[in-house]
Image (cartoon, rainbow, N blue to C red):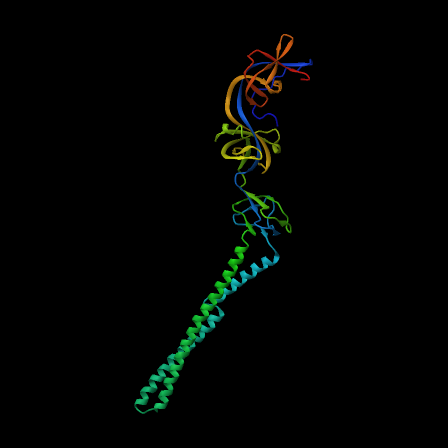
Length: 365
């Protein structure tokens, strides 16, 4: 990709001919000053779901291109026995919860016994009172009255014992439920990072491993992002970063749509030098709504000044060391120049040439 910012209607006028020398007459043109950057296009928001330890990839219930909901399971790591253990604990919690409910079989059976004991206790209490009164009038013997009182006391004790048993059983079943829940929570906590869920409503862009493969620590398993909106992640040379400002226009191309130009706007400048490349990362929000493909490479020009008028020559005429061949009559003289803006196929000449001068490309230079 060579030209990104040539103005509409301006073409490169080369006086190519069959002779050994091509010439160009220096003149003023309007240019845009831009900074070159390269990088890749990514969803506006995206996430790499990674392994937090070396683990076997048990299952991936989604495929690339699937739309997913927030908290939907995208991948499960671990061993089959670990999954089975979690399933068992879930069933134990469900069973313990069912047993601890007031309507469970064990509590209902004991509750029925309590109801019968209460009825018996009430009957025996009435019978004891009646026999006691009858004994006073000698209608029954004192021995029979005493026996009735003993029976009433026994019934009351049985009723109280069954009530205590009910409370004890309730506490025991609640304790088993709590224990099962604690075991499940502990196991689930140890498996945090093993069940990877989508952090957003979005789209699966990439599945990096297959079921049964071993994922190493911090290996990406799935890439998920929000579709429809994209951004550029660009690298700008440290010598140019001082020219970059928020809201500057960015014109870019990608090989996916070869020959087509798109527009973005700078919305983030990360002020940390990447030592390996001696560059800074700049992000730009893509304005177009085309179907872009994440991690596609892009080349871009960030416009730092628009519509600057100055003397220009085609970049092909400029030699190393910023010099050109100036034609004077039939002779060519190597002349040093001071350059300014470089925009596409054009280079601004700040000094060393004047309008109307003729520069040339010398064959075999």
